[in-house]
Amino acid sequence: MVWLVIALALYRHQSIPDVLETLDLALPNDANACVSKSGIAQARERLGDKPLLWLFEQTARAWVAQDAAHYKWKGLALYAMDGTTFRTADSPENRLHFGAQSYASGKVASYPQVRGVSLTAVPTHLVADIAFGCYGRNEMLYAKELIERIPDHSLTIFDKGFLSAEILWGLRMGGSERHFLIPAKKNLQWELLSGNEDDGIVQMKVSPQASRKNPALPETWTARAIRDGDSDRVLLTSLTDRRRFKAADIIACYRRRWEIETSYRELKQTMLGAELTLRSRQPEGVHQEIWGALIAYNLVRLEMAKAALEARVEPTDLSFVLALRLIQGELIWAAGMAPGKLPAHLQRMRAKLQLAIVQKRRGRKCPRAVKALPKRYTVRFLRKDTN
Image 1 (cartoon, rainbow, N blue to C red):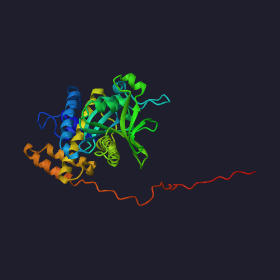
Image 2 (image 1 turned 135 degrees about the vertical axis):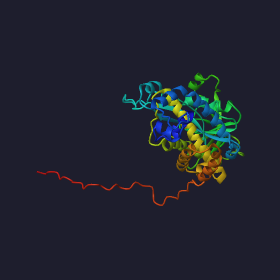
Image 3 (image 1 turned 120 degrees about the vertical axis):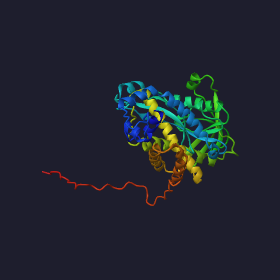
């Protein structure tokens, strides 16, 4: 049943009975056995979400650590943190538990939503950790849960929405060599302690609101401020060693933050396809489905990382779309294969994955402009009656 929940994300375009039949997941192994839809639903209810949560935590920790030394950025593991949402089936249970977006007009969104914040390994797109729950809960609260679990000797790239002394100072004080990189807001004020406006050490005050929420915070906190000349953006970071961490390298590193947005697109649009709404109508089933989808996504990304190492390219140089299609097809073949043949089959699959290298796009030839749309019908103009 655990494998079925994972497979439901890989084959989101198929019904649950079709996935069960295609991958031959029913037990006992009887050719005449027939599993009813109600039997599948009851089995999922018995399973719950806790086994999938445990499996995700164990596999994510192990898979991110595999070949981690190969992807170090100046001796640090590179992560990105950002928020996202999942749309659930519109049931009274889901709406009551998760809630939905409300508008200023008083209207409420048609579907309940799950809000979450994830920690993603930038080089491989592997989801290292995630916290999710009710839509009405602020992203900052989910981020605080993840801060405690970020590994030592790492650099985490944040969106500017996470600019908070409690989060960033907590990250630095909660472990060894846990660094941050985040863009500053335009209205942020600081005092320049050393250096210059393009690259200097600045001191900022902790707001009274943050001090009341967390009395352990200091009155001020410091960071290194680097100005990106291309975009006039100012980056704040705890990487204060100018010899080890050049300003140009930090600016280039921040631009890789977009990788987490790409990973969300791979998970929610490519893997889950046009089916933007999760299947489950019960909150526990939604949790179970999300954990299964994350495990499935990490499985695909893990195989891509292994193939990329053998091909001596970056994991992001391989096409996720082609890799997903290949793995979907290979799993169907593996369902009827003898166990002893699986290792060789896995090696052949990785060899095929090495051929899924994305070709570099050529530069733009024409100026970026919107062309006029041709009118489908002739337009009749009426003349004003002057009589």
